[in-house]
Each structure stands twice: as structure tokens, then as C-alpha cells.
View 1 (cartoon, one colour):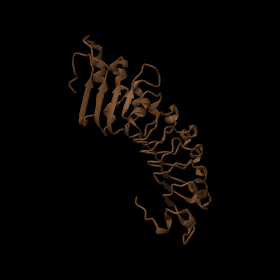
View 2: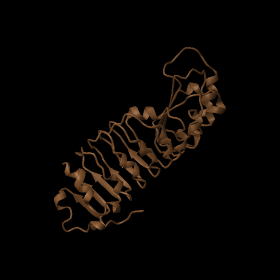
View 3: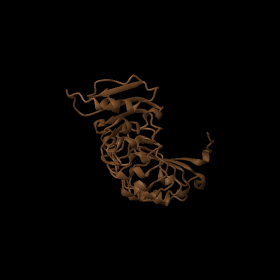
View 4: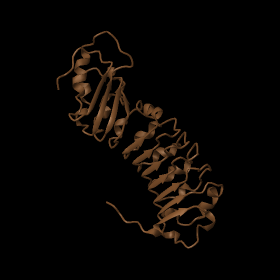
Length: 271
């Protein structure tokens, strides 16, 4: 539901020297900061009512470490898009109300350990960032709806255990099957919100039609493209056991594009 926003609730901050002039800062809920000098590191923390903010957007030239994030106790949305920080400060782990974090196109390479305790997070946008790793603790963020990652991190995400905990997730580029608990194809069972494109890798680790059916792909009605990747290389040996696995996978009826790669069975199911 759309809500009106008062002009007094919004503040574009371009000059810290004039931050208190003519404004009722206690009423500000949405702030955009376009200050790139060292004064941002210390002087902004002196602004009263930071704890009243609901959204904060920091300029793309941000380079200095922020030490006052812990004052943003009611923040819901934060954008650090394009920032030059290599690592986010530990204090970001104290923003327990945070729902949406945008670090896309940024230089951020790693996220602090406490970040994975932000259980209210619904969206993390790290597209085209320098992020290099994704913690196994990401599966604790059970409220995540969208997790946009650079390709290298999306592949690392695909081999983590217990991805099925992220049952509200709407995008997952890759899922890699392994024979051990927490990595089996059944982890996909309750992830019925997935949309767009899903590539399932290493399906050769699925051993039966019954095991394949545990993924409940037929229930994932929002998927448009499904890529079923059996193995990294093709071969000439026919493995008729894979016929049943393919049948058990049973993609959703409205799928627009279905790819089957390096499959060694000798028949396709008719449905």
C-alpha cells in the first residue's frame, strides 16, 4: 500500500556545515547524504535523531569507515550503492530492523560476521559488487526474499548446506546437488517462491525417481527457465537409471524453457 511522505520527512544532505539550518531534523525519516570528505566520519554522528531514520542513502564516493551505524536503531532501508568501502563496519550487525541493503556496484569484498544475525533482512542486493564470499550462516536469514549476488558468489551459495531454510527466497541462480544431508535435491522442496531461472547442477548425485520427486519442481510455478545439468562432461555410456530421475524431476507445466544437459539416459518421459 502506497503511503504519502511529507517533505519535512526527507533530507538531501550535501553540506554538513548547514545540516541544522532551517530544518526540523526530529521529523526526518529519509536521508540522502552526498558528502565525500572526512567530515562524514565524525560530524554526521553528531546529528541528533539518527535513531528516527527509516531510510539512508549514502553517496557513491563514500570511502571513510562509518562508526555510527549503531545509532540507526530504526533503519529499514540502506543504500551503499557504488561505495568505495572494501568491508562494511562491524556496527552494521546492530541494525536489527534493517529490511533492505543495497551494496550493488560497490567495492565491498566481505561482510562482517555479525551481518548474518540481521534476521529481519528481506533483500540484499550485491549485484556487480566485489563480494568474494558468502557465509554458510546466510541460511539463518529465513526472511530473505531476494539475494542478488555476483556470479562467483552465486556459485559458492549453491554448494552451501541447508539452503532449504530460505523458503521465502524468490531468486536462486544455481543449486548444486551432493549426496550428503543438507545438500540433497530435497532441499528445494519448500522453495516454491523461486522465479526466473534456476540451474540445478550435479543431478548425477540423485539416485532414484523417488529422490528426484522430493524437489517438488512441479510446484515452482513462477520459474520461467529450468536448466537440468547432470554432470560437467558428456559421456557415451548409457545409464538407463537416469530415465527415472528425469521423470521424477517433473518441471512445472508452464515452464517456458527447459534444458537438459549431459543426461545419459536413453529416453525422455512423455509428460
